[in-house]
Image (cartoon, rainbow, N blue to C red; front, side, top):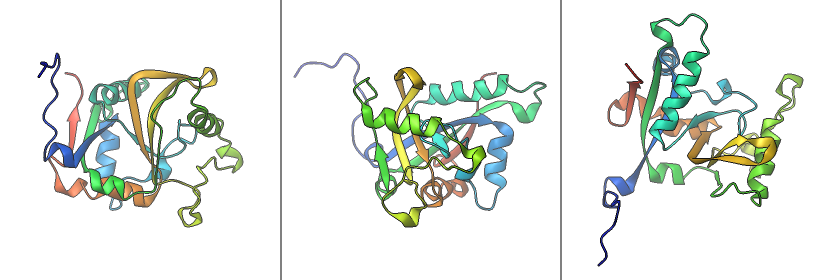
Length: 197
């Protein structure tokens, strides 16, 4: 057998049964999620994100840390409540598999399905009452997939994605419930971790 240059941890339980997702935010946002009786609310998300309004996570901790820092530096006069944090969710894969999901693997210039959805969602007219949803065929979902995963757009108008990045966005109460059920369990299922010094 040929030795691996960068061997990954073995694919066996618990690694094979769960995925770690990260969300970058400010301390006050994390506190609000924990304090809320309903937890994460997908309707609090921006309308013009890559996959539309929702709660966004990534499997890359560094990417979530960058999201948190970006939010922090945009605060005019930061307080302790505005310090950057990441939220770690250790999610059972079978719970993600049970969601109505849409997944994109690539975002090259020929990935027309991906770019069609991103451009549709990024050109939101939410202020005019036009909801740029996913038009899930199950009308009981209100037009949204529970979860969408795929690359992150860097320059969506030019069809350019960010290398070594991903996003898992949750758009319905059913999708967010997968994460909300982890909050009362605490570590390692749910944990808020400060970013930086």
